[in-house]
Length: 233
Image 1: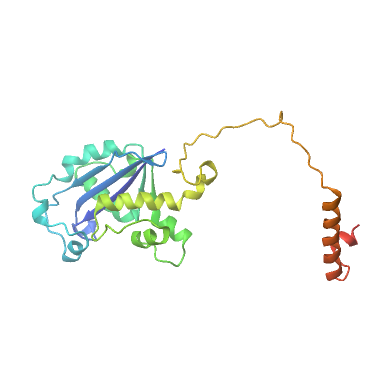
Image 2: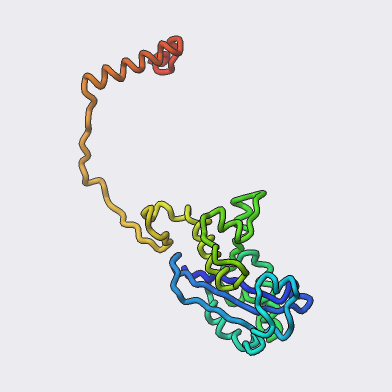
C-alpha cells in the first residue's frame, strides 16, 4: 500500500479570493514504513502573504521570489502522487488550493490522479468527539514529538501527520506485529495446521479437587445456598 501524506502552506485562507500555495510537502509510506522518497517544493505565488498567514509559516516573499511557479513543478508532483492513497489533515483546505492551482494550468482536479483521499481530521473527530483535533493536539494526545514545530512547515507537518496516522490506525494490524516492531499492513502471517499435534491433557490432583470444592462451598454458604451450580446440580 503506497500512501502519500501531504501538507501545504499558503498566502492566506481563501483560494477563491486569490490566495496561492507557497509550499508543498509530501511524505511517502509503503506498507506503513517511511521510504524517504519525499517531495518538497517552495513556490513563488506571485503575491505577498497576508500578515496572519506569515505569522503562521514565516515564509517571506523575498525568500520565494526566485522559487518556481506551481506550473513548473505540477508534472513532477502529479507523477509522484499518481495512484497513491493521499492522506491530508483538513483535506478540503489543501484540496481547494491544489485544485485551484491545477485548474489555472488547465489540469483536472487532484482526484483524477490519485487512488483516494483520506482526511485525518474527520478520522480524529470520529475517534475523539468533542475534543481538539488539530495536528498539534493529536501529537500531544498520541505521544508524537512535535517539539521542533515552532512554525508551520509543509514537509515537517506531513512527517508529523504520518506519525499521527500510524498511531490513529495502529489497531488495524496490532495482531500481526510484535509489541516492539513497526506495524505493517503487508506483514506476512504464517498459517500452521495444528491437527497433527497431540496435546497432553492435565488432570487435577485429588488435593486440587478438594481445594476447589472447599472454595465452592464457601461461595455457596455466603450466597445463602443459592449459587447457580448448586441449584442446577
